[in-house]
Image 1 (cartoon, each protein chain N blue to C red):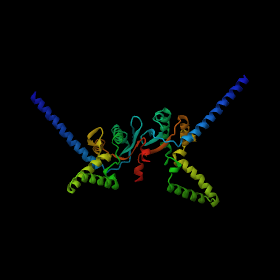
Image 2 (image 1 turned 120 degrees about the vertical axis):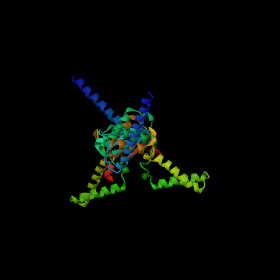
Image 3 (image 1 turned 90 degrees about the vertical axis):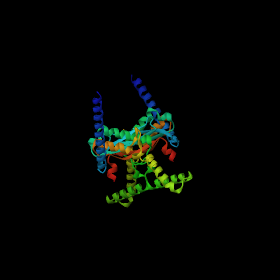
Image 4 (image 1 turned 135 degrees about the vertical axis):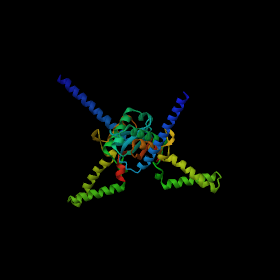
Length: 184
Length: 184
């Protein structure tokens, strides 16, 4: 009985190891696929109950075949919900404009100095807070709303590994009733 | 029998007259309401079958009550479909930028001159074609896809008359798969 249990534990361990290897391989090949062109895809939308908030998103992949899979469609739906809930302003880190970055750095620098930190510490603190800022404003850096130990970028990478095609988000719109009236 | 028929025809005529008066009154009061602020509303979306084309739209009215009516929700849905099918670039005539207008005028002027029209006629021809241009690129000027003898502006006016509140379209997004890839 004990032997059997040990064998079972060992077998489970092997399966886990194999899974880790496979996942590592998958992610590695996902990284390789990230350069491939994505011209197919799906336009998805999410309207929050009450119709006061809505999102439109374009998610791309390499083939029409993958675009039609349930896995891909679920990803599109999850990403639309993510944008609705977490309100990102940009897709990738690289998309954050220099003006926005400079402004945020200034704010964080002033804040750190205001808290009485020495000049020496301020740079480190600002860098830390800029990472936090990217997590807030960039879709790819945000924690995934349905599983917040993973980022949206990692969610997409896992789908690339599973579906065997590069996947990218090319654009999104997020409308909330009254947002434009407030801006005017 | 003939008398009865004549009476019926007259009665029908009266009803029609009354309807016309009511509609005229309605449209007139709709024009008056057009200045009133619209801070409530609905975010609607339309994804064309196949998920290669999608629209997100914000349509506003004055109260949450009207926003929740079936009439209003149907209007939002129809407008989202309109944007998907007729691909407007602007909401109102006033939204067309000067640069776009100037460019279109140049094109139409060159075209008319190329067709051998005299300078005298060219101005009139260009004005006529500019009206056609507005009908193509401005949502409000477009013929309504479900009933192309009426414009979108008139469709909205009839809803203002019926629902008793000002209604406006504040923004829309229209995504087609591959549009951004083509632009790059």
